[in-house]
Length: 292
Image (cartoon, rainbow, N blue to C red):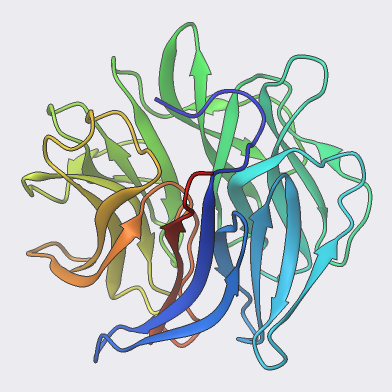
């Protein structure tokens, strides 16, 4: 299930990379001697936004330098962070000090005071609607994980799925018509799609693997997702430190193809990491450190 508690370090080094979706060529941007997760690509193509040990950072691709984003008291952020369509704001999932539960907050991407959006917890952010008006997230309510939306100004959440088992990773298509997500309802974790109002929930992958975190390319043509080997993990789990694949499929449906094989999992592509021109993906791979 979802990772409980505050974000924690792992005994790994992290490699921030990009991959060309046509050639499959990988480019290493930076290596870190600690945990780095979940790069978002800014729409100007100049930066990647990632989280590390509870804080949010901005990585300048040209200078290869990272700077921390001032997030006020929100210093226990996990790898569920999303940029607003105009890239002026960032929404984060921060584990509140009072109970350690993940809730969603919004703050300026330049830094500033976070504003609480979801009082219900736990809530794990994944999507921001193209019109800027709605957030989509996975929430546990009464022991069941389902997909919800809420206005960016806060208010009453709307439940879109209602089945036993985990529904997770909701993300809007660029035209705002659909929400893509992953669901364990068929036994394995698979990629699904539904209309933005929750209707017409449709299975999109039928692989013999557990598929997580579908991300639609900005041009709307392709969907990238993370695949765990069948039998290597429980269908409802997305752990770290596994041999995984990043796969691509047409957004209209059809067979997927392997783009990258890597050692990773949790933290690799939890958020949409497509480049603005839909030609590259950013991701994080990991290396285990030797135990002392």
